[in-house]
Image 1 (cartoon, rainbow, N blue to C red):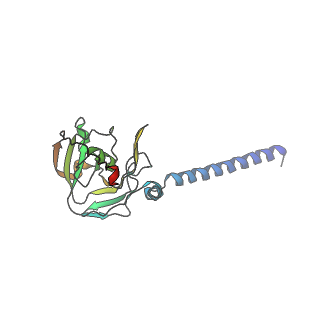
Image 2 (image 1 turned 45 degrees about the vertical axis):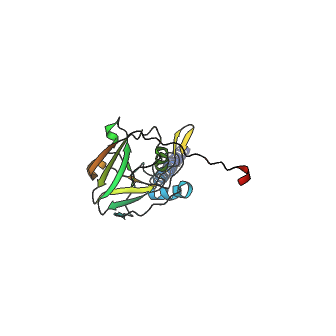
Image 3 (image 1 turned 90 degrees about the vertical axis):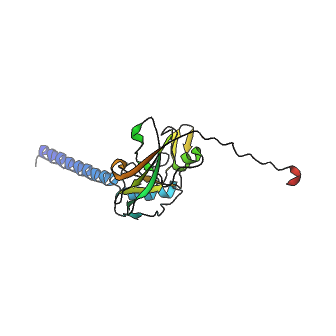
Amino acid sequence: MSKLQKSAHLGTHNHLVRLAVLSSSMLLLAACTSTSVTTQEVAQSATSCVGNIDNHPGLTAVPDASIPKGVVLPAEQGGLCKGQVFVTTKEITIWRAWNSEYSGSKLGKWWTFDKPKGSISKYRRDNVICPSYSPLDMLVSCKIKVGTQVVIGPGQSAKCSSYFSYPASKTNQIYLADAQSSTAECQSYDGRFSWRSEPKQIVKAAESL
């Protein structure tokens, strides 16, 4: 074999080696990016979750169902810190505080099991709702139809601004992908001002301590 032929053969061999390495790298990258939500959930729950996925009446777990993208998220990004897909076995009443300035907010994707009550600031903290998300000036209750799939889990922390964040919450939230078609008997409520004086701090006299 001439030197020219050897050089050409060596060049072809090196080219094939580079192609094989590149193909292997692409396959490895594809395997990494196709990690299931369940795997991500386990990793995140170990580091950022403070609550559990509770068992709620009228819901049955669907272990093999995949969680939609954007529901379980890393710390400071909102959403859920871990989640489980359930299917409704009976009608369940759910609640959502929403933004009257945007009608599309009424039947959004995030709901609660309990009717909001008490302090608005506590409700925001428990459900990790940044002020920029919604003024929470309207309330709607609906019944989820039987056979509807939902995702349940405790809330992930959210960075609302450069100086304000909510920590992760143990309160379970409901992710409902299409409330428009999977709910019925919805009732809206208008928010009104209702003020209470702040609790007074009782300071004991020094001699009574």
